Image 1 (cartoon, rainbow, N blue to C red):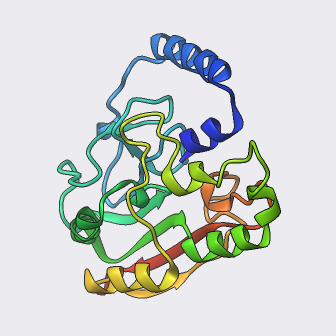
Image 2 (image 1 turned 180 degrees about the horizontal axis):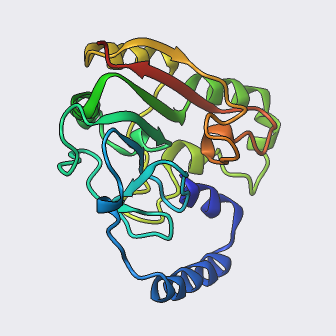
Length: 220
């Protein structure tokens, strides 16, 4: 998530200034529920943080400058079954515990219409292990953390902790157990939303993509 990236790249003093700016923005942009502006079939960007995707209903548990609807993405009670054509969750699923993941995927399955698409991006344990091994000198240099922000989350809010992990084999298995079909990885670049930039494309500081981007469908 964006908060994790900010935490890794800034000092506590810089983050305090960022928080002050965000607080001032909240006064300029009051909390607005834009649910009524959207009609089914919905395209949902879940756990959007501060990234607004055009053409999507941007949903998060926290009020940000990008949010259209504040909702618990585990339940999404405002969205009826079979009313959503597309769901995108970028660096979100790792923030839920092992026992929460399948109920979440099943709820997303329920609200997707037949043929609807789910896209998920999460940190890829396989890629992380490979990158870590290839850069041991960096991680064994004093002052360099062992990539704890990427592995354990930025931990800047109660929502910003990583509680589980994925590789392609495990995520596709979980999706199939919940009824999804056609599970496959999709490219990091270009973003499937033209012009969008988010953690699914991240490859710093080593110049290598570390996200697992997977799509699946709800069968007709």
